[in-house]
Length: 214
Image 1: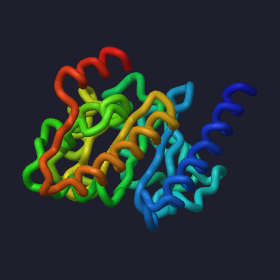
Image 2 (image 1 turned 180 degrees about the vertical axis):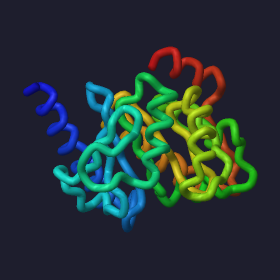
Image 3 (image 1 turned 30 degrees about the horizontal axis):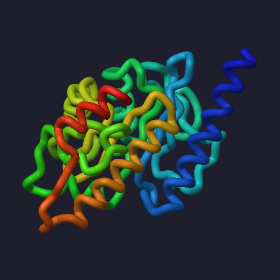
């Protein structure tokens, strides 16, 4: 029992710490964005609805059972279903980060990106931490059809980009999900900076070597 309580307390504190870091660096704003972590018993801690990631209270985080039913804490984010469908699709997922980060959202609005893999492999760390990035078609906020679309792609890629909305990124740990989300946002910023310039992304051979090694 002590180990379970210790793990939950540690993960609550981690969510608050990561949320503040993300908010303070301008990767989210207002009450946008949400974070979740899957505990050892399969239940989920998630940021509450209408909460700023910069001002979270660890005691008020939402606690959900493995099926997504609310157990305790404040009312969960209305996008909790996104997190739930990622956990269903990816048995190795231990955390999910969803942001409305500016550059990633901007890329999600571009008309001429490849929906199968939105961003080119501009850097080694993007390939290592994000890899493939499919684009999920636009759905209105709260539309349950979005969950089905995300679940299909999440089974093939741990990061997806919601059209006109933002990224949803899973990781084996919260740190892994956070770093991948930040790498995605930085790559989106670089990609937008290079619009109108001829690109020299990594070659397929270089990408294959990175994936084999990492």
